[in-house]
Amino acid sequence: ILLIVGGNDTTRNSMSGYAYGLQQFPDEREKLEANPSMIPNAVQELIRWQTPLAHMRRTALQDHDLFGAPIKAGDKVVMWYISANRDESVFENADKLIVDRENARRHLSFGYGIHRCVGARLAELQIRILLEEMAKRRLRPNVIGEPERVRGCFVHGYRSMDVELTTY
Ligand code: HEM
Image (cartoon, rainbow, N blue to C red; front, side):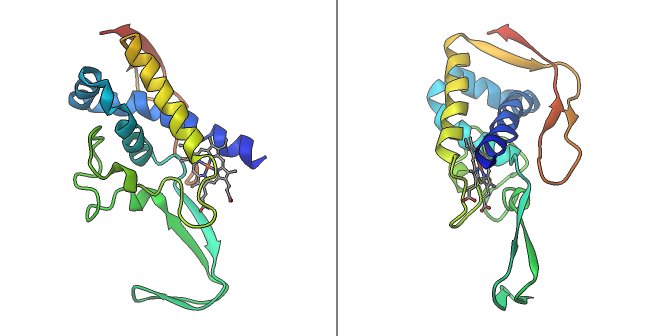
């Protein structure tokens, strides 16, 4: 079940994020269209910018002091990946999708530690292939109208998004 759910709501929303994100930042879209060798890095940046899963939750097994914030054994701790991915002390101009961002790979969209996403490589491959095949055909997804978003604080994605494809 994890393999199906884990691979469904996430990569799909990164792909929609690719259409929506580049629409928001036409300068970045132009950069990527002019230079497809940026695709592998753009994939990282898209996953950072979209952050398809906003958080996961853990239960602390022992007392811990996290940079001055006390955590007691049994406490439930929420790890907001989406917040980490907007941390301005790590990602300058974090709200912007920057296809050649130098440290895009530092995103935490796949989590961290022993439960880090087991499908991360597959997800990256899927998105990379989509971008490469679009580039080969010089196809651009244009978002027409505001997308409808998923309501909830876990899956950070889109319920529906109308796009039309044009060539460049
Ligand atoms: C951009 C796409 C994806 C994102 C952002 C994503 C994100 C995540 C996150 C945040 C976790 C939890 C990490 C943790 O608890 O520390 C996770 C776990 C997992 N993901 Fe993904 N995922 C993606 C794609 C996929 C794909 C394509 C698959 C499989 C086909 C997959 C399968 C799983 C599984 C099985 C786990 C559980 C791993 C464990 O608990 O040990 N994910 N993913």
